[in-house]
Image (cartoon, rainbow over all chains, first blue to last red; front, side):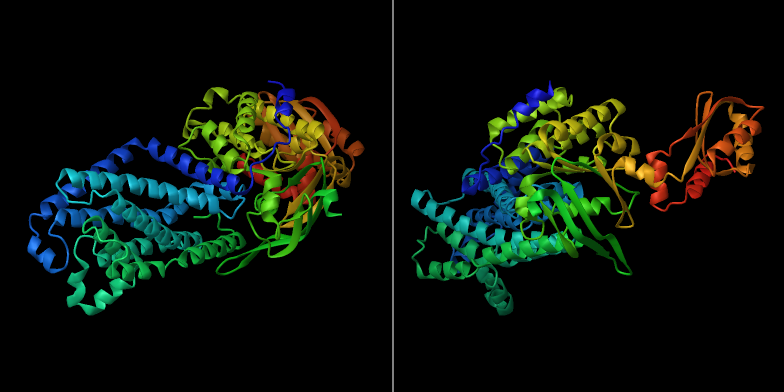
Length: 293
Length: 340
């Protein structure tokens, strides 16, 4: 190849800018992350096995749970549907809250974070969107697989497409709010490296109090724990999701509106999360921590 | 004024604060680099070269001072600065790639992040991969690449969005000789034929001398010299060097060095290298005309091929300007080679 050929490619091109450019960068962040994930074939296989196994575990646990007890607590007697809906939604909890900080750890220790920073044109917003979308894609795959395994095991989820649209809207709201916490944590992680462990603890607590595998009403006997549970967005998201998917309750139901209101109260976290991320990114640039792990 | 220079720094300072102490990595550096200039930044390890270039690339925020790249402030307009520069780190820069992606995918990914239209990016990538002889490895995962291949890939990455200014931190470190020559020629043509400005850091005196229009020497965070490579040599004209070439075997080396060290006309031994049977020694002297016959006399029993006056190499000049005592280097080298 001659240098002349190279020169020919150096026309001053029209760069993609504005919203179109932003979406393309987010797409690149998502697409190439998917490519990296798929390159780990063993991981992919283990993830699928994990989903099927956890569904089977709760299928057998369902034989131990009395349907009457569930009905007394205000749910339908179908424990397998109850547990699998909780597990399906909790997959989003991990990918939205912990994955971004985990990804940040990987990028910083691998050295690619600094490389990304050198070409960053929107304070990482498109990259973050792509990564959140990637996490949501992964969670949605496991979500769908979990629900499908549930159907095969006899779980009675709704078959109404309208109710499914309501359920998906709730999932999107849950993803957005928890992703905001994830963005905040990822920003703080650039400086405070021990935060990832705390985040895992926090998610486990949320999962526990949220009632992933037991009815929230069980906590009525422990009022303090019950009120702590109500302070967490996931608790409200899961209640909304379950009541939609299993009980087919419309969003206009007064009980549903209370949970929706509580969940929406966390929406400003999206703005706060992005601001905190920006703050820590700038702090890391001041301290020279973009590439030190 | 700001637009007149590709890079302009004004009292740029960076202090790393540790638990017990502070390190001034860059200490009030003011530099003006003209458009289309090939500018070399030289300095020993830990001198502050990388910190300085990272501040210009907006990866680090200075504690004091300001800099403008292509007229844009690194503090107030960092996104505009990043759009206009291509930044790469040399040997350690291989870490800045995604090892689980192919070389080609890495480049397309970064081109997309830099808003380069797909068609143009693909054409540019293919041509540059071919030019830097990576075409056959394009679809392999980067983890299968050698260090040299990763460095070349990083260089292509820095050029993808056709920036006017390139900030290259030791871009040839870790490359084999042939590749290094190719990369140097390519970089020089970027400034000569395309008018790109290159800020280049290096340890390699030879390449700095070959490539750079101007250089600055940085030591302990401060610029201690700025000028052309020729000017640096002239600055150390008082350093008189005599070069001796002889044929010898290893058993005689210690004896030869002892003889030279004992001569009053020899200030110190700058360097000595043995390649096969040939032994080259460079010594600093007070007066070359007086020293040469005395050295010849002292080595009359050895197989001397030539004794001649010599200009200081850029490395010797650099060491002198940087304030590193040549005697210390010389002694260290001798100790390393078991010569006392």
